[in-house]
Image 1 (tube, helix red, strand yellow):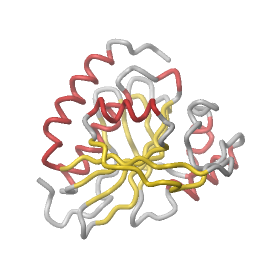
Image 2 (cartoon, rainbow, N blue to C red):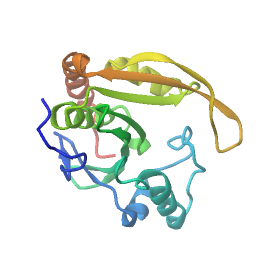
Image 3 (tube, helix red, strand yellow):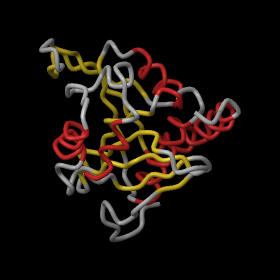
Length: 207
């Protein structure tokens, strides 16, 4: 249950067995730049940053630009504090008790180790258990099959397609697919995520 009177961003950081999420700051741009490559950045709605200044602009413009409705987290590994990536909550609507997730990535050497599932677990636990939200949504490019499979594996429900919804950095139009998770679905999703984290963390290396 949500805590009465809790405001959106009262919890400064979230920690799991392998990850720590803390609020992203512009000064994290240099460390964050090192986590991206062409494949990691492939489906983002902004050109890939190649310099610290460009990454700082992404952070300011896309990730922390609206602190009342948006919060980005820097993901670091607990074992050695290595920066692994980023994840974001946005379109926060306290009245309607909903939020969206997006702008999430992990450096490629961390893929397939349960860290993506752990990020989702920490954020969903925060959204449903601490903020008392009723709905968390995710939108993605219709061509992004890897993320689509991951969302379905974790228990998000497909809700439909918005045609020609957004413009990609190359100027082409993308269809956006919407996935959602309701508070009533969270217990089953939580067990699924915990199982995936345990199974996939056996693959973790020093990467």
